[in-house]
Image (cartoon, rainbow, N blue to C red; front, side, top):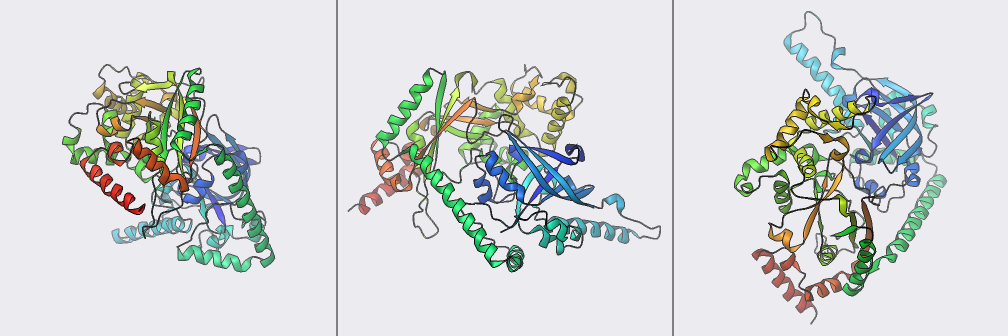
Length: 538
């Protein structure tokens, strides 16, 4: 299996020249956008070691909307700054191809309106052809991001007249290991006939002995990774509620001296779950479709269901209400109740045939500095929640304003009234003042990028039942899977074979579907499932 990189920037000024090399930086929130889920799982926890695996694959350097040029490049160095959550990529350009723009379209005096229209259509087809060959999704052309695509870029370029200059043996020779697979825990099933065609052609080119050796190396790497994961997971794995509570008690007591409070989140699939709110999650390999449509979706729900939000006068309250109904928001549910989190971790997944899947769950413990915990009426909370009212283009303008401030000497760390000439910032402050008329328009840039732990009002049955609080994600915020100084993270593995017994124990403690999701529908469902469980034991 072959891969290639797409390293795309917003403007050419974001590509820095370093002597004979170049450098692009990516915030980790932009890493692996528009990338297959199996690859994202491999890089769920970033390390320098697993990032270095990517240097062997060819890279295409692009600018949003394919402006100016596309370059074939060889990555020389990848540097991960875990504190700032930035990744720096150094590379050498091997070959650049000029890309036409609309200004390059040639018109003649005798061109009719229809002729001019056809020339514009030809240009659109030209760009679409490049986009489809490079496996770009619909909005991907507008995003500063780093994607890893499946396919042999040299075979792809040979089949596209606009990219054929990349398909030269001298360039292929620069990547002797580019056909080596990544050590994915689950190999990707290629369903596209085009992709299968590329890989079939590649397979014919590969020496059989080399192919066998690569497969063996990949298998050994996978087994070593699985053995390491198994060893780490067994350190914090429980099989009874009593074991779980002893572990929670031990961890919680250790936090008292550190002035921290512990919260919990459980999920049924430990391998594939990421610490992201639903708004930030990628849909398949189509990118952040929910985030790109945040304002439109937010306003559409308010418009079509106005009575449901009559009692909410703060954006945070609106978002928690939307979250209650599984609407994608920038909130991530956490709980003060460790048993509620354990219940979610023990959820049993089934396939299309109704057979139970062998999937381990996980409870994540968040130990949060008490000084960093906010309440629902905090000004910081208003600043982050009202980002939901900005379009993606407006959020880009806000990012540009922030970047401009960072380049000033000395750098500015605050947005204030002097920025009101920027209509997006003025509109953003207007949204905040709709719920807080007294709000002074000073916003710390660093605060906009934070993840906040927020205690909400216990106004909804489900929040009360689950002792719910929230993690609120700001502009391009990301919580590292391994945690940070504010959020210490501990993971407790719930093995698939223990889920049923744990659910039975939790039921004795009155932690079940009926109490976690209080409603007539779920009470009826709980009673039905209880009868079925009892019948299965006879």
